[in-house]
Amino acid sequence: MLELKTHHFTNDELLTHVERALEHTIANRPLAQKLKEAINYALLGGGKRVRPMLCLHCCAAARGDIQHAMPAAVAIEMIHAFSLVHDDLPALDNDDLRRGRATTHVAFGEALAILAGDALLSIAMEQALSCKIGSAHIAHELATSTTEMISGQVLDTLGGFPKDFNPAQQLELIHRQKTGALIRAACRMGAYAADANADTLDRLTRWGETMGLMFQVVDDILDETQSSEHLGKSAGKDAAQGKMTYPKIHGIAWSREHVKELLDHSEQLLKPLGEPAQPLRDMAQLLTTRTK
Image 1 (cartoon, rainbow, N blue to C red):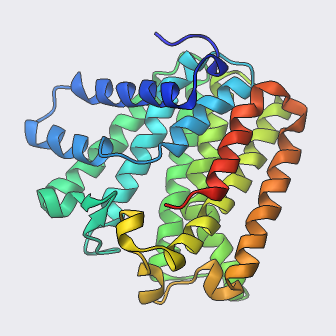
Image 2 (tube, one colour):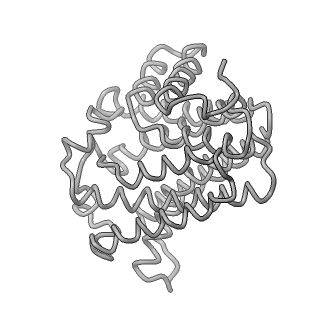
Image 3 (spheres, rainbow, N blue to C red):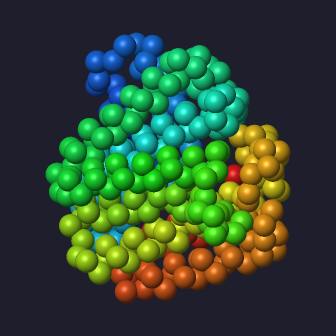
């Protein structure tokens, strides 16, 4: 079992607990062997685990017991994994590289990849509902943010924006939905697991929204400036497909300055939460300086 407070752990130690929880959740399920193998490949093949870590750190920032947030952390990472498996399919982004190795549909075939993504979605909902505190709020948050993420994927892939939206507004809408929705949800789910008061929930919600946008702006910059070998996924893909990015619309220099502005805003939101929010400050710094 976990100790009571996140600050008793280093980030690496907490990450180990997340990995074990993800492994345990799948290992104990009576799934078809091929399905289990495909799920494990998609879920356990590396990754930064940003969303589950945010969930746990937000629970601690709201002065909660992170044991109560671990099922929520597992759930949000499963939704993220599901989204990557389906996004990589030939009908959508048609990617063959993810986290430095073959995408799930390349490794297991399209049919099994689709089914593995479906299973990750349903198991995630089970995990959300298993939370001891705030399970109804957590499951509702997970479901609504997943729908919002899918809507963002539609806008990014197929378009259909409001007629009065200019390119900059279109881009921000995509990012707030496609990437930002799950990051915001991770923060809110952690707060719900801590039974946070209204002010703390609002602050962590706005902080999560800020992080979601900042994460994607950084991602856009890396897509333009790093190689596929370094990123572990296809670099330059968005530009090649004619998709909108922050550097394409605003330029690299403006995009980097915007990241700094978002980081400053995030710090202002966390100030009243004091020392328990320090891991969130540390994560924000890491997310701004990451190179992959």
